[in-house]
Image 1 (cartoon, helix red, strand yellow):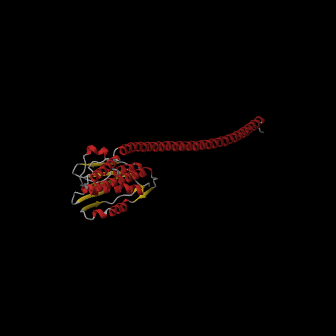
Image 2: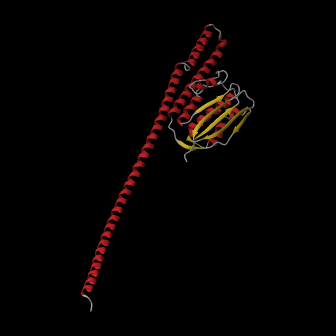
Image 3: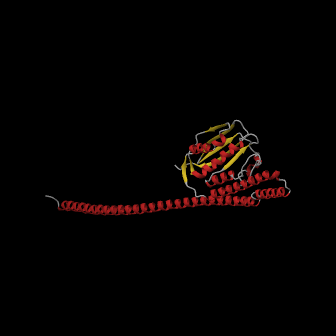
Length: 312
């Protein structure tokens, strides 16, 4: 016969187990619900953080773009300030030239005209033709001065069109243009292959024309004359040089070389108005480059200029 106490104890234990199982199931359900809620909150927070990160990245990108724009604007302002300074310098030179250099030929014209009149008054026409020729020469010089000044003015105001430019055919074309005045001379050309540059084709051609014209002019006494054209690459700029074995110049006057109407040789030695190198400097500075010269009297000269490399 089974004891009732044993049966009751067993029943109580079974009930306890069922109760614990029910509580465990309820706890598991609650934990699962809490886990799902936590996962949902984590997902929502992750989405919020991701959105915040994207917003932050966009803000950082916009700030960098703004900083780049400011840097670019500052560079542009510096460039324009340099152009304005150069323009003011050229204006000062121009004013000085108008008040001095341009009056010289006019004084000569007036003086020779007076001499011509006096020759007629004294019934001595022997010097008439000489005076007439001198007047014509001075008038021609005045015309050339004015033409060169107009060219210099146009160069400073010309609208620039930047393109990638192959300098090799440009140099060949310039040399061909000078052939009528060089075919009777012995000139040894040393022309290296030049890299492409980035700039205004017309203005760069004018700058190179002036440099080659000077090399041809100032090697006139040499036989053979030697003119070398070459280049080196320096970061984002190409350095072009024109070297000759001509008369050269004293380096202590090099700072005056690229000024308007500045001449280091007498007009009777070598013709010219002194505007060519000023044009070169103006053109190169408008391209953001530099121009300079190295020389020694009687040992030739080398002119250097820098131009931008083509954009990649």
